[in-house]
Image (cartoon, rainbow over all chains, first blue to last red; front, side):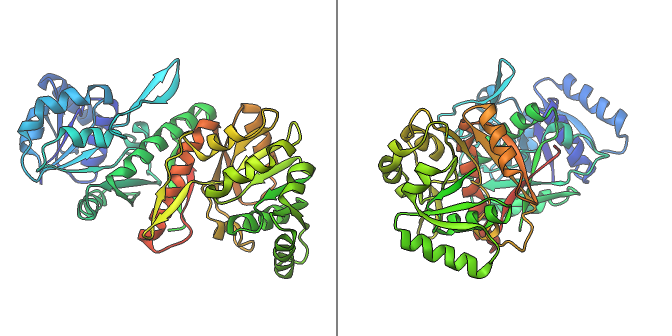
Length: 218
Length: 218
């Protein structure tokens, strides 16, 4: 199975690449420009020599991977999806990790998304034959990328159907110290994205960078 | 200091009454009809003889308490607030615990609230001189009312000003085994109410009744 990341050179993307590779996945690190992807892979390999990471263009990721993580700044997501929508293979599982957050005067602000959530925005721009889930919305990139630290939290997975959620949870269960929680249909993404904004605001108030969530009682 | 609960005879209200009284507060249990409040207090006293609980009408709660919890079904909140708005004393701290949830065919559904959240709906119906916070939105009543079990979770407090949030946190810090997290301005209530809907949906999927949240990393 081929796993790839659109936007694998960003803060969140490289953290995701490292964490997925450390869980045993062979990860294609995508970027608009292949040299940027190569630079990121070289840096990640310097820190973690054993990880299976390869550089690719975003287009390569889209056209060759069974599972594609979308990890770009929300502001650029529309353009990237429009550019690549026709290259996705039917049946590809896309996992959206974007959050529509902006910082206004240093204050984290959730952007209004006409579709209701970043995941719904992404869905509207993907071909029908692509299957969509959302995950890794609430874990901070700084925590995700620190491979020597246990994650010690839950991550919420939602998706277009119970089957897609179950498949995504089974896939991501290979990541140690992370418990995956079935958050239901794709409409739950609106809640998860708000929770990220809440965690970022809590970080700011508590002078931390690591606020994340655990569900107690299940 | 006098603490009272509007709607103290409901599922959430009586759990809140028991938990606050067990934390040492002298609690006025309010209801529309005094005999219903008396019946609830008698039941709570039968289970927990030492608790300081007294029956009252909602009107008594509004006109005599320094801290008033609003714990009514969201569908009835407008009517109750309209009936009592003019009886609140200036400076009263109102703590909104309502969540705009309805069950449609057994599926928990968040109601659309024109104001953006139940807390904003409540704010629009309270006199200016009353100060508003929101708390206990995400803890299930069944957990809150089970006094022999530790809460083992966080509860999020948001409010109209940092001072109101700080005061509410200081007040509720008397409740053992509960950590209070500063969730910021009243606009955070929209997120907390969605989190409650998420917890209820998670309960349904995991066949539990106790899903609640803890913030990891602060």
